[in-house]
Amino acid sequence: MTNPLFFASLSIPLIAIPLLYWVYTYPKNKYKQTNLVLYVHDYLTGDDKSAMTVAGKEGPTTSIMHFGTLLAHDDPVTVGPDPKSEEVGRAQGMYINSQLDGKALFMIFSVMFTDGEYKGSTLEIQGADPFVLKEREFSVVSGTGYFRFVRGYGIMTTEFLDIQNLRAIIKLNITVRHF
Image 1: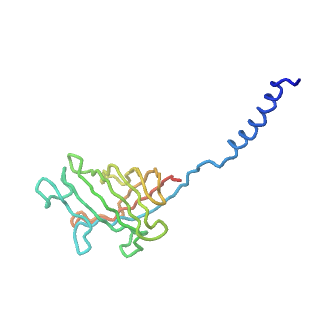
Image 2: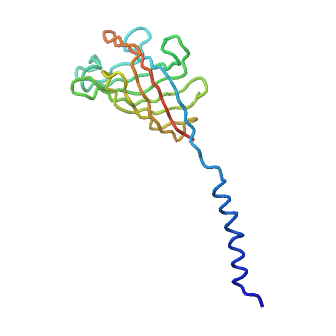
Image 3: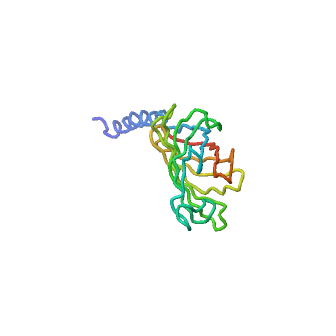
């Protein structure tokens, strides 16, 4: 009579070899990396006004340059710094001046893509904006659509600033990883 351990010892490689092959050859969930350069047109004055103060020390007339002031915005997002360049979305959210000397904002907003390759998708941006610095880094904390399960960061630079009229064009250089 044949030893049952003999058949058991033969069956282990028959199970292990296909299992090991599957583990090492099965395609892993690989991250895609997307790099974007976008321009946010943030205007607190003019016919194309896209932001307004909603709360502050002196109510809605308080300048965003004062500590504690809260601003809501729905800014155009374009592919170039020229206000007439192609609009691909909107930056919707808020800033609060969060530094006692008034030289930094805390920002939280969504880049909502309304046109182009990423139409219907969003990126959620959050972080400090010490706007007196040439370059500021921020976090990309979430996203939807094409950017589902995203994580990343961005570098923000001021392309144009008119403090007297409170108008700015901000360049966002964003790097994100997602599935």
